[in-house]
Length: 279
Image (cartoon, rainbow, N blue to C red):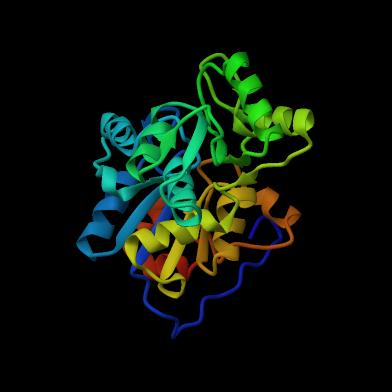
């Protein structure tokens, strides 16, 4: 392996993989274009009856929006197969405080997810201040969120990503705005999205699946792979996104397997994760 890190072998008699979790950007698509072979990979999962969820920390869009975005690249992924940090956050609050209320800073992906679990959106003594992503953060909303947190509302954020992409370069994202609110209030949020393994576990629950028979495929060591590891999944790092092979040895953990792209997994998922491809 060119990175100098040695990924452990899977046990030859390990449980068969029946569930697959995967990141979206850097794994299936890159800059609004399908990564070559991603369509063959998804088709192979369908052929073998392997259930899957596409995970994303992006809380701006609904699952239906993201399904349409993927379709524009040539990938047919139903909305039910997409799991966002907004959906994971909504599931979390509905379990913690069923039928509660929230002041939400975000867009349709977050507000619709909260509505769907029976939450009321309000500025009057909400149970939670929930911070998500938006293309245009409102200083007025952030100020309101600060005051509500100071008044006792519990502080949640959909994900810790400090910046997001835009056609003109990086823009502030949830993690950066969360830091602003924390600095103003002294209250740190509970982050739901990756690398919190809660994101993985909630996706597995949505499939009624078990970690022992599941894998996580991602392009980031510091979010996808560590979250999969902490959730008890076998992990596959693809080199079509953020993390390159030479960077793996910098981390105190390694993925189960490293492959060039999901195209390497299209023909035989079990064989592919049992063999390091081309390194």
